[in-house]
View 1 (cartoon, one colour):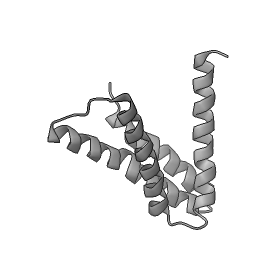
View 2: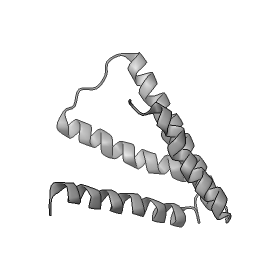
View 3: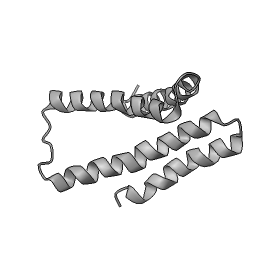
Length: 111
């Protein structure tokens, strides 16, 4: 199988499992706590990858403020709201929040 197909397969598995874990996790954990835990684990994985690859990190405080602010707004707030929507039984509300997550992040995407 080509590398491109492996990447698409991996993306599908990761993205699909995200919704499964959201559904299962919300039975016991509040939405914003679950979103925070999810990103704490993801951050740990990314910092580990950066350390292994010895990637250079930005030095300017302004860059860190921009990265952290963008991350909190485009991922933390968006996914917190999506997790809240998943607690609702209204499918239209869920769909609107999930679509809004992507639409809310679009202005921050590089051109």
